[in-house]
Amino acid sequence: MTPSSPASAPSSIAERAAEVRARIDAACRSAGRDPADVVLTAVSKTQPPQAIDAILATGQRVFGENRVQEAQGRWADRIAGLSALELRLIGPLQTNKAEEAVALFDVIETLDREKLARALAEAAQKRGRSPRVLVQVNTGAEPQKAGVSPDATDALIASARDVYGLTVEGLMCIPPADQDAEPHFEMLRALAERNGLSVLSMGMSGDYEAAIGCGATHVRVGTALFGERNRP
Ligand SMILES: *Cc1c(COP(=O)(O)O)cnc(C)c1O
Image (cartoon, rainbow, N blue to C red):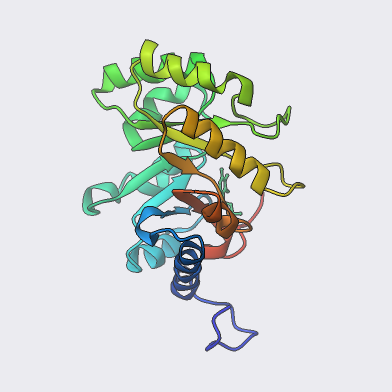
């Protein structure tokens, strides 16, 4: 929390954002990394317009969203007026939403199967727009979780690139909630390295500093910036 505010008062979004950015810088320094190499993705799912206005006012321009339609509602009217805005899809994508996703997002972080690679390639062709792509890896092999299994990751990267012509930039993971995240971050880094990929989207509000220590280039932070989300 910000030292200058009374303990009982909720921090403003601007204060929270300043604190998260300071922590990112500190984590970079202690890992011997350049803070310019780590991008803060503000996870704006469920946030009302005033919260979006508040964080835009701090200069934040990179946003993560879980759902295509929800993101359209939040961003469609803002896109034209904002330079350098980058929208990243971080939630699971159904093939029947591929075209809308390609039309809206700059980066799709959740490619996890060949059928989706094909749908994205077709959508890109149709729309004349090619978002960059990350492959989501289910590092914990959790049955209920999206993501390609670690064993099948190399093959999916190869087919996404070579068969479907997608621009695969890197990997993304969401470690199991009940485990130490670092072994998962290390696994993701090793998978990226052996495939020659430079982007690592890993780390959320609870573990973004650890992720930076393990090589994250993009941290996806929601709660630490905006406060607790209203859960359905
Ligand atoms: C919601 C979400 C986040 C942000 O989580 P916080 O704990 O609120 O920071 C990050 N990544 C993904 C994929 C999410 O769905």
